[in-house]
Length: 83
Image (tube, rainbow, N blue to C red):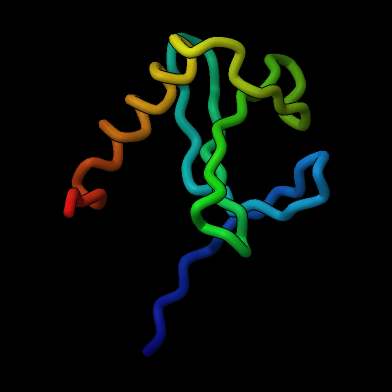
């Protein structure tokens, strides 16, 4: 028996298709964590614009990026392993 995981995709303005790796809400801001489907080293974090779930925005500051990245790492630490 094969177990399949349903995967969500999104196409950004650059025309590249990304896999939605995670979605996390922090302090009333929701972030999407995306991996390029053809290049898994191409990882980005986008912020969902309030009142418009279809619009995404890049991270505005290093502090905001660090906050969003740390939330992702904390949430997924059991599956992320250091080598």
